[in-house]
Image (tube, rainbow, N blue to C red; front, top):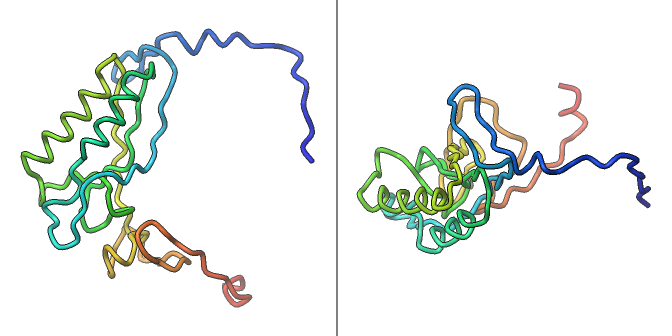
Length: 171
């Protein structure tokens, strides 16, 4: 059972409404509210046509429009994968020169405009799933490490942790 901790002092939350300036870039954020990164998995995906993968859909643009009008100072995008062969999941947005197109650029432009529509600042979460790429997307992924994770790679988005044996603990 959890125990309630009584707080004796109440802090003033008004600091959350204050502007925030980043020291290095000098970029100013209108308040200190952050929409954290999620994995939306709503961009296009066609296993047989890589050039048609990772294009943000109108549904995703609509989602960012809602967040853009939500009063956040800072909005972090979901996974934007930089290597179309190493997705975290089917449906990730992708920025990769090898499959880049006018359609990709226009869709990302819509998302950027949606985020900034009421003055929010956008931060793109760039990623590469490496060895965590689902086996249904890439049977032989690679990453910066030559050490394979101790997980069983299953279908898109599902990873099951393997049991470790006593010999694993002794190494």
